Image (cartoon, rainbow, N blue to C red; front, side, top):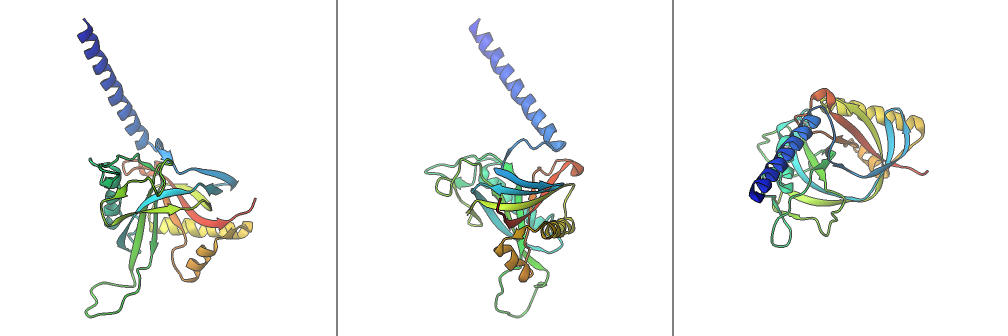
Length: 244
């Protein structure tokens, strides 16, 4: 009777859900980007380079220590990713606070990473690490567009924090593959040279970073770790001053 129909309907819905999950997973393996992406409008493009106007957004970020050679793919990067994944609830109960409970947050793309020299501190003895090679990395998830800095759940982990990103123009160069530090740096140099050739001004903040020999670009990665390396989508991003 009706019990059999209800039971059969439940099994059917569960089967559809499993099939959908498997389809999504297989799509991600071959590079399909099936999550919400940071919202932008392309205002100029040439070959693999675009100027994009990004909407304002909220990022959840965390910092980590790395060396220049392993900031993109090293263990510090992986640990930072796990902290952010726990905040949105990838591994179970989200490590965030909204009113009296927590809230699961959808994953978005891209994941942003950047590197800076650590803040200078007074020297003490003994010096146990190579201060010349040590870097401070930052990893960020962009929250879904419905979140603002006021309504986004607050992180429970003190190493995780929210940051408001203003609307901005950004130059992007897109490429595929498993990206390491050298590949990202090479693409940043290529993009910088294209902007100079096209007469597109980089932002004042970016100019200052270049003058102080700091990293002036961000790496944006769009795929989970299980995506086939040659199917992965990456951008290197440089903030610019752009007038239509």
